[in-house]
Image (cartoon, rainbow, N blue to C red; front, side, top):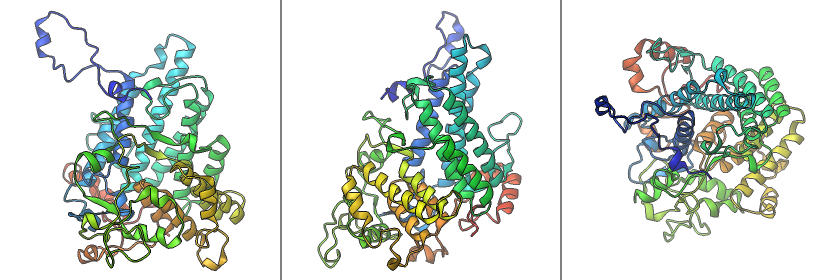
Length: 500
């Protein structure tokens, strides 16, 4: 792994000289940088944003009811404006990620390349920048709905950008990702950003993996949109599969963190170095896994609860805190040392998620095979999740035979939506945003707000963030139009693809 610390240090390229005007140059604010540094910074910033569990950044694990809080349960009760969580999410993705990607793009000039090989390298870099731009915009759409897109990032001409229709953005992102995958697949011997790529490390095989990520992103977006535009979704999924998606856990899109301060997994700062006990597993999630029985991932996810009976029911090793209420940290199961590790990777996409998406696509007849093919993908998703958490194939095989897990067990009474939805929820542990998205799309698991949240007026689990407060004041006209277009700026306003 190349050294993140070095790559994230923006190096000024301005030569020193004896002119007195040098006294006006702030050495901590370089005026010239390199495309590689900006790309690295954007790559890490977006991963940090999606990985962090700090309630100042995101609350996706809480919305998915995989985790809950102890002393301060505000966010589990759906107060996201007290800490301006939507504002931070919006700001990080636009300012720290998309603006850096735009600046990186502007520093790459294929037309002045010295050789054909250099042109190819620059093409790969631009395609990779575009993939990350598409990923970032997809997160924004899946968080808020309509967002600034065509006028975004153009501060000079559009300081107050209009909001674009979310479905239109989705289709443009899919088109862009398909084009990027084609470029990256064709440049198989090109190292693109080299060591500045913190995920696939910029070796000569990395372009092929980035193409697989782009195609997998197309599948994710197409499955999301499938309930409102099934014919279009089917065409996109089949084309992406033909082009090539993630093929195994070896292709997982993960940023490997380091032990040096500032380059550690944000969970380490949130759970260890902060010396705070703010988060524990949530009982809805723990109880659901426990009810299935025999899931060895639970030892990877949770520690044993230590409180005596009757607080901890007889026969249960793992018990989560009451969701949405204040909890005594010492009473319940905790997050394991597996996650409390500075080096624990941050994941943007993995093979298990892809398999559950494809199982859903098969059941919806978006791809051939129907239920028989869905079962293959479903089982492959469980296998991939077990392997990714360091468990054996024998462990996964035993789990798949359990009555509540076996896909074709009619006695369970579960629909395909419930089977896939529950297993995706379990596999997407520690990937709160994707777990929340899967829940919104499939309506499984059946999550309910806490009593305290209901007392505050929340009768359903939120399905979107409200728009940032700063947008209401600084971009009020466009904000008002966007809020009206989506049906109201409320946390229970469903996104365009979540209408069923």
